Length: 301
Image (cartoon, rainbow, N blue to C red):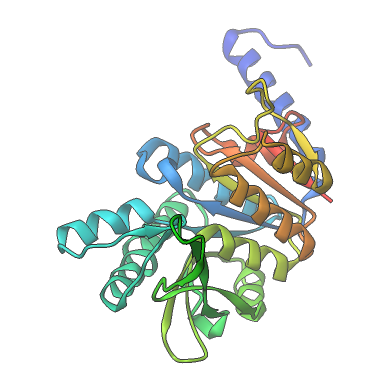
């Protein structure tokens, strides 16, 4: 048997080496659950959406049980504007009245959910669209927040309307779908015990799902490379204790604080590791799971 005799042969050899290098990582996640929270600017870029769909399809054929939880804030905002329905944000959460929650469910569980399902199916996967309502997968309770009045310094409760948080998670539906060789794609809306529909923050929803499933990894696809140190360089790995110390010192600040706190909560619920990574990097999911370098910040216990 001879070696490569042309540039094309050499290219095939290089591809084979890549596959061989990835094999140990594929075996690490064989029959393991990986939850991916998909959102941000990646959803609005056709090329990135296609690479994401291919990554999820590849996970499934590699023996991994992928579960996708998605957001859709920008798309919800655009439709609300078209319908001339005013909405506001308090503490980073959309105040959701009855008209707004109807639009939220229509966009999240409708057009966005089915669009992701179609993309994964077109990439060779077998995806099925779900929401927290299916089989009472997630039961929500109304989320409460408080704000401190700057003048009186008195805290008051803010009514966010139909904004909820996961209260109970029933993994049975997800297990049935995954064991049937299908990929669950889940919209973060859920019923409450009061019979109302609640809009749930997608990060929080994904963390609750991953915790209930005892996932090997929870990946947050974001608009940033991961957690940065004081010199703005990527931190590859953190323990929970180190992450808390960086929050206390102010190195982790702004919108990254609730993201990291959600990671910590997921780990405390049983997730082995949570990764914050840049969804704008093509094939970020595969780079993180199937290569030595990874693609973001891994937080573990």
